[in-house]
Length: 305
Image (cartoon, rainbow, N blue to C red; front, side, top):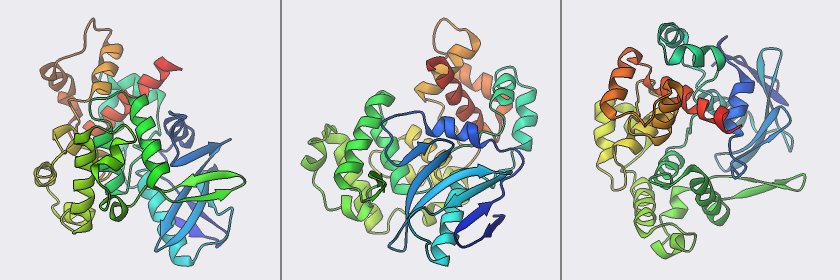
């Protein structure tokens, strides 16, 4: 990570293929989102580092990401961890040169890569948050998924008030591990999703499922297989989490409905493509399927705007 700590703020220097405005477009895609707030040209996000609550105002000035602390200056350790979180959140370790080379020679990706140049996969660095969000999103539309997530966070998350606004943290797996199924059903979770989320929280509380354990496996297939052993995690959920939390650019949630809709739009098809057809379209995307998917997802918002 390339950054300078000025104590009252941090400057983070992203790679040249980075477009903060494009990242803000993605972050602003739902007015139901409560884990960050966009105000003007900055995004506010609450983090917790070793029990310390850190409210960040993240903007972009003179080719650098500027992270300010509107409430109080955090400890030097908390500032360091905040910088690392933001570096990971915006996937700044990824060298996108190869992706753009591939995209420029691909009929589907060429125009998208040009249009959204500098957009990076906005990750979900916290494994529990990534898993819960993926499980919430199973077999429901995105709007209702956001509604459920908002209820879940406002019921069980921590918050801090600044300038009359609440800034929320995602609930901890330790807290959710102590819930029963009825606690989530009251929020309109199905019995099955409630069971899955509580079971995963319990597995994480026992240390059976951690980001560190997954990262140690190195091999994509090993990670995928180990995730599938947990109830509620199917192939799509595993691929989504490997893409958004573990940041493997080769992760490919091929059964994703948004991906299918985006391909249908981009190619002007009468119907959604089949999995076999998608494999053919994606033949050139080897190693960068996650970025291809993310750029296709991004194209869906243009159709809605």
